[in-house]
Length: 120
Image (cartoon, rainbow, N blue to C red; front, side):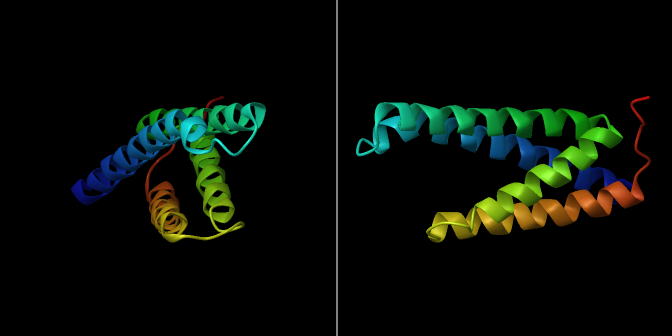
């Protein structure tokens, strides 16, 4: 039981760290991609911030073991893992892909072994 609680805490920490990383990426993106138009730069920065918000919501919901948020987190991580390797793949993309795969496996395993609370 204690190991499951530790894994749950690790998952929450990974979600929060991923969210913080996305906030930093959103803040740096417009300045580091001057070759793109301003609307494109700010749109991508906004999408990165939205993704970060989703990670924070998932961390909050997973901490409270909300079933709906559990499935939201699975879709979020799976989608981000897939999207991280759909364009030009570099070292950062591979790191994000592997981190998302690890998080996905951990979320699925803990979801099967933990009692999740229904939102109804």
